[in-house]
Image (cartoon, rainbow, N blue to C red; front, side, top):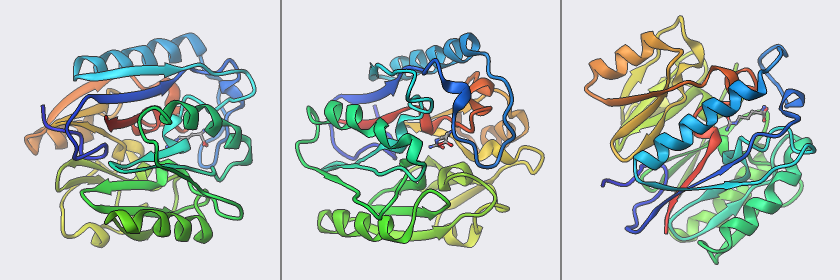
Length: 267
Ligand code: CIR
């Protein structure tokens, strides 16, 4: 099976780390959405469907436990960036999320002996890191600061990655605004990120009626996509992409998309 763009260019087993939904999910951090009530059971059913689809697509899914003091832990992507050679343990921009990284670092120790950690005053959320080949785009967002970005660049440069800072406005993370939908194709909301930054790629724009529709998860050549944004889904399909839908509107109330709920890598 082709490997996921965001995960690795190595051969081996494709792993998806996920994390259980905390009982305290309703106390999640929010930046661009009003707080609304979240149906925990419904969120769990949707998360399980997501994990099942990852399994179906060839991933070995490992779900980490959580606790009531980690409201946002299901959004595991923000705690680490796993590259072929190294795992970078982040220092999330929201202080409430910093304790999430301990268990994620422990789980990754099995797969990536080489690890580095973002240190204060740096902050970096995994949701701000978009990988396209050996190029890493990093969102300058409210969660990732200059010090975090500079540390990240210094960590990954020796492994042959280039880092490009990208301003993000109007949304939480870079990957709320743009994600990979192919080796050289991106899905993008031009209101939140400058499309010209991605001019070297094949760009699919979201339908303007669905601003949160730019977050898709690419696994191999399949695009895992939220069922609640049909207009943009039609655009992806018209582009010839293989799209598989999952229900995702409950975790979306906590400002989570599809990339957020897993860390994908090959080992
Ligand atoms: C937060 O504000 O941190 C969470 N409520 C949502 C995080 C979503 N993660 C992501 O986009 N990578």
